[in-house]
Structures are given as C-alpha cells and as structure tokens.
Length: 319
Image 1 (cartoon, rainbow, N blue to C red):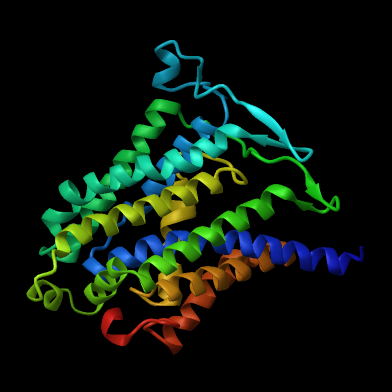
Image 2 (cartoon, rainbow, N blue to C red):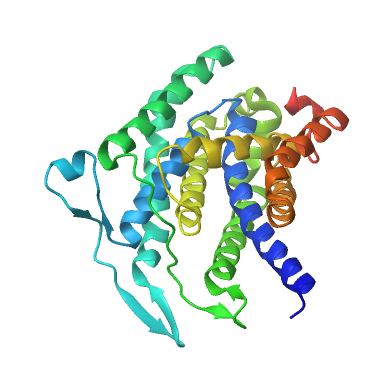
C-alpha cells in the first residue's frame, strides 16, 4: 500500500474513533445543559470513573501504590478471561464491562442529580460551576488515593488486525460507538421520552404547565448523560493511557468544545461537532502533531465568531 493511502486510512480510522468518543461525551453534556440549563463540570469525572471501573472489569491490574495497595491488595479486578471467536482473541470481561459500567454510572448519575444538581437548578450558574467543579476534584483525588498516580497503559480487548494494517479493536470501537450514538439519537428523536426532553430544551416551564412530570425526566436525562460519559471512558481507556487527570484533559474540555461547535441542546449538533473535531484532531495528529491542539481550539474559535449558536443550535438555547 502506498504511504499516502496508508496515511489517509489512518486519519479516517482515528478520526472516526476520536469523533465517536467526542460525540458520546457531547451528547451526554448537551442534553443536560439543554434540558436543565445545568452546567455540569463534573461530566469529565464520570468519564474518569467509567475508565477505572471498566479497566478493573476488563483486565486484572497490579497496583503499585495507593490505599488499596497499602491495605494489602496487590491486584484488583476480575481474572481476565479470554476466548477465541472466529480466530480472534476476545477479552470476555470487556463484554461484562460494557453492560455493568453504564448501569453503575447510571445509578451514580441518578444520585448526583438528586443530591448535587437538583438543589442548584434555580441558583446562579456560578453556584452550579463551583459545586460540580468541586465534585470533579473530589472524585479525582479519591481515584488518586485508591489507585495512586500510576499511569496505566492502554489494553486491547480484541486482538488482531485487518489486512495487517488496521487494528481490529479500533474498528470494533467505532462500530460499538456508532450503534450507541444511533440508539441515543433514535430515543431522543423518536420516543415520547425524547419528545419531553426536546420540549424541555425549548421551554421547560411550559412542559411543567402542561402537567408533565419533568423532574422525573430530569433524573433520567442526567443519568443517561452520566452513562454515556462513562461508556466513553470505558472505550477510551482501551486505546489511551489511564491516570487521574484524564477526566479534565480528555473529557470535560472536549465535551464543551463539541457542544460549542454543534450547538447547545442539539443531539445532532453534538454528533456532528464530535465528528468534525475528531477528524480535525486526528488529521493534525497524523500530519503535524505539534499543531493538533492549536488547530482544534482555533477551529472552535472560528465557529464561535461566525456562528455563535453552533452548527445545529438555536440562538435562543445558546443564549
């Protein structure tokens, strides 16, 4: 294969992979921001929790330091179980993690909405920012205390390559993410629950006046956003190193950039924004790595200057 062809394939695969992660993060954040007008700076902490829980479910890890090690636990997690399916080695624990991680963090999201978010719905945005940012720092330090500052290396639950060029696991990540994104889109756009969510995005007060129990919908929306962030952390940990700061560096900032580009409150916008930024970042990572972050932020600045409401957002919701 020619070098140019190989480079283009790499950019496409990495762009789809990174774009899917950004889209999952963006969808979770935008439905909370659009529906509840709640600024959740703890969104990245949910990504962090999902990454660590998924890591422990998916593969056995040795602990070098941290409270768990000091208590005498030299290893943590389930015993890694593998099977060969059609000649491909698959970590069966990851299949369990794909089910358990979203369910566990969905429950965490319900608790966060009830005890952290709900008391601040009618308070100024500064209160929301402070409480959620403080929660994010607490979660990060708890993770650091339990596991130490150790950086865990990426792991691949599915081994093998396609034609000796493209990692089979990267293709699997893209497929799983796109299916989940499509399912979330259909739920928001084609179901009664989604209708309430979209109506709440436009005018939550009118939804209340119509007698719809929007508080219950708020809990489900917040928990859904948490589960999507955790799932992003689960698959993100399989191709990137894992350490306590990743919640802010790899999740919170990209999630906000995604909804700025796509438009606050728009699920379609979150998907489009995630994919656009994913391809921009992947392309420059491949061609000029030193410029990738600069170009990423620069492209967001261009969108803000030319279309402040985002590609698919409305001016009213953006305001």
